[in-house]
Amino acid sequence: MSKRKLISFVIPCYASEGSVALVIDEIRSVVRQRQDTYDYQIIAVNDSSPDHVMDVLRRCAAEDPRVIAIDLAKNGGRHNALMCGCHFAQGDYVVFIDDDQQCPCDRFWDLLAPLETGGYDVAIARYPQKKQSAFKNFGSRVNDLAANWLLGKSKDLKFSNFSVMKKFVRDEVIKYTNPYPYLSGLMIRSTGKVCNVEMEERERQIGVGHYNFRKSFALWMNSFTAFSVKPLRLATSCGMLCAFFGILLMLYTIIHKLMVPTVAVGYSSTMAVLLFMGGMIMFMLGLIGEYIGRIYISLNNSPQFVVREVINRSQDPEE
Image (tube, rainbow, N blue to C red; front, top):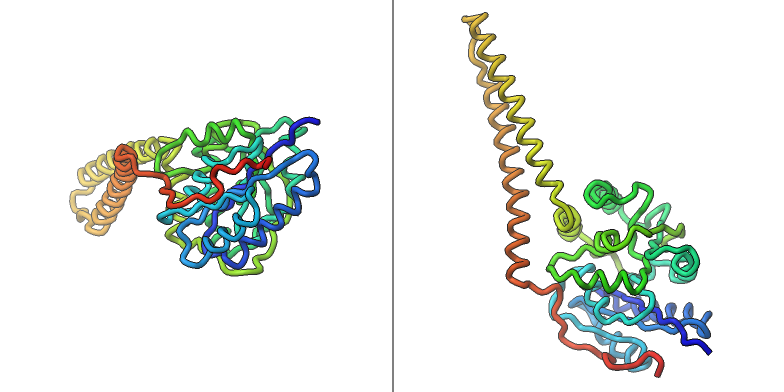
């Protein structure tokens, strides 16, 4: 009998003590449907949650040696927690799934199919309608447009919180050691064989979302600056364009003054130009400063995550 393929499920956990155990139970139920062919490993990463998530994970790990519970010493965000889970994942396939029951885990085999039979390396769930606020939908749209431009992502490809990748992609992803990981960008950078699988996102039944404006903006900045220098090139182009229009305006002002000596020098237009140019300069300096700051933090070897405790680290999933 051939050895069963191992699937590693990585769950970032934050403020989900009421739902994460239900997600783990559903994963077990889904994999049990094909237990002759597949085995599972669940890596649940407590991202320094303010509630009792870690107590729930301890109980799950005590009941099932296939559940690895990881307690992080400091909150780093969803992508940092996923990176932590990737370092512990041993499976032939690595799955990212959230802790809030919104990912349609019952459709997992549909998500895996393109990797098994379609020749793809990464499959990502695509939701026709996301069950989130209008603000988050707007943020997702902006992030998608930025990824199209910066990462060369296909306009038809959409990112979501439910995805699966092959082991070699995971091996490439964990080579990234800088403190600002962006998993979608790392997967796109590793392979071009990425597809979407249509499915419906579930309604949230327990708890509320925790991605506020600050966290959403930080994630957007990661995608904006982590994998491309195009923003710096855009700043250079804007500077050259402003300089060009400044020269034209200067020539127009001189010629107009020579042809109409009585014309008054425009205070309002002068202030408008100064404010515009000052704003552009500050924007460009801020963008350059963002890159330099990230370089500085990376050179200081700031960690992506710090692990306080790991439960079931040495367990063999086959045991």
